Image 1 (cartoon, helix red, strand yellow):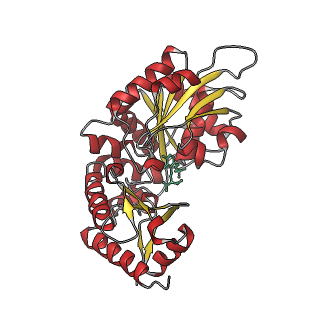
Image 2: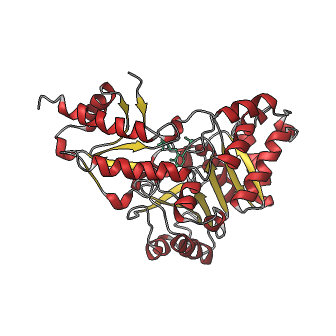
Image 3: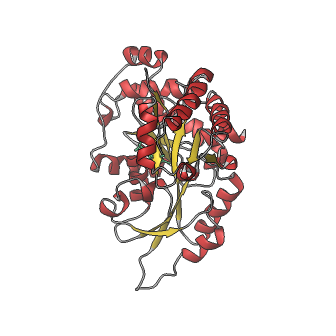
Length: 347
Ligand code: TLP
């Protein structure tokens, strides 16, 4: 039995067109800015995301780190949602590598409250770290891939800017937000100073993310990327996939969203499982399994035995992510495997 891997959209493999592009891409030393394919990707990415300049980085984690390190220096404060990826899943890099002091603000379903953010910006006083940057996330991973509406994002950015803070957007899945909202991605980046988005998630590239902002920001970011060991050589072999991704893989994200919705509707009919349907706005489905009486690890192990790979959001939920490898047949089969995993039950 071939497992259906719905643990993440990071599990996507390159498309045939990407393999072809890799083979024929002109290459050079990107450290010297002499890789024509990387240069082309960076130009195209800046244009697609509505910013002056862009930089190719090895991962989303490094893209967030580099961006925050450009905006703030060790000892400064970064305001983050307590459920954000940068705070929750990036191994404490903002503290251990960037030396930043995280000031967490809780969000509701990925939505920060502008008043709470305003209240979290401390005044300048020798007792306090200097607040320098607000970090936003859209779509919001831990709230189920929910979209932060553009108007709210803009209000949050205004609150930060009025108080002299820069705004960085972790837009790992910003094209999911854009496609699901029927807006250009640039609508989400107009009022942020920097944005990171991933090529290696639903867009199907094997490696790589982009950071974008003003030309001056990217100049600084290039230096920080080098300092972190993230400057690459013949990276055009990877950038070639990124170009294909930006040209061919964005519109189709709507299919993942449609299938995630269908999957959620089916799962909601299975005894012991429930899904907050309002949270299913893009490609993710967070399933509440408390009704099964199983703990998350045990449940994931049963799913794996039944041939479905999911990821955990212990202690109450597991996550399934629809990606381009899942057609309607795989979605139906995933549901059947969940039913089977729970039916072989000796509780
Ligand atoms: N998210 C991964 C895991 O790290 C949890 C996933 O499977 O969802 N920002 C957001 C919002 C992300 O979801 C991720 C990856 C990143 C940044 C980091 O990207 P990478 O994995 O390229 O460092």
